[in-house]
Image (cartoon, rainbow, N blue to C red):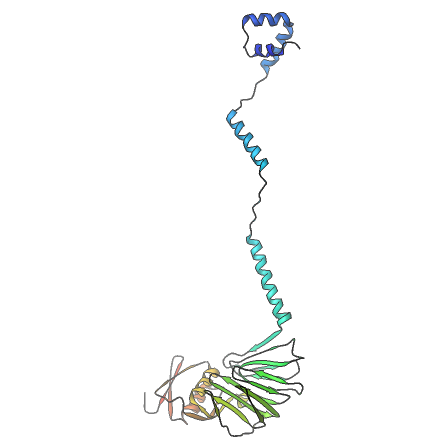
Length: 304
């Protein structure tokens, strides 16, 4: 079609009357009327120019920038924590191989070792060893008191904070408490190493250290330690050690008033009756006791 620009101006009412006459002369008047009719039927959408420009620039900027996704890392941290726990557990189970046994107050426990050696733990004692390495090294760590019945074989070693006990196959008892270390041989031969010195014990012999001093102990023959039979026995033992054993066997707290706790006690007490046990200790030492709630107080005769 000719004169498209003029026709657009005509539809927009931008032509003068003279320019309209010239347009009608150059174009078919019926054609112009149809164009005008259809154009009047169309409604141009209302456009917010500024909003359109803002949307255009925003769209261009989003195309230029890389898309960034935000991740919640908390679940990942939880998974990582669980993984660390599982890995640590696997290490101790499969690589470390440490097996532990522990007794509480007034409790004993019998442990059968991989070579069928037997250990009986007294109250508040702990025993540990590496089960994976047991066939190569029969080594244990003891904290407390235990009676050992060792099967014959390669060297059997028991480590404590006070010393090292080594045997090939025998029966012996180790008591390792605060300021107290004692080894008694019930059968065979026992080697005790303390402060780089080694002592050999045969059946009936005892090695004892109290407050860092090696004690001379008379020989005595017995088949096993008395505590195996629910009785705690002592031979010239300071009272404070006897008191500590009473506390372990009966879950009590004992205090003293004007009592010399370094005096020596020879005797025994039952591990099954608290009242009788207290009497067995206090009467030979000319002491009395009274009970205040959960505390037992020892004092001298004639003093209240």
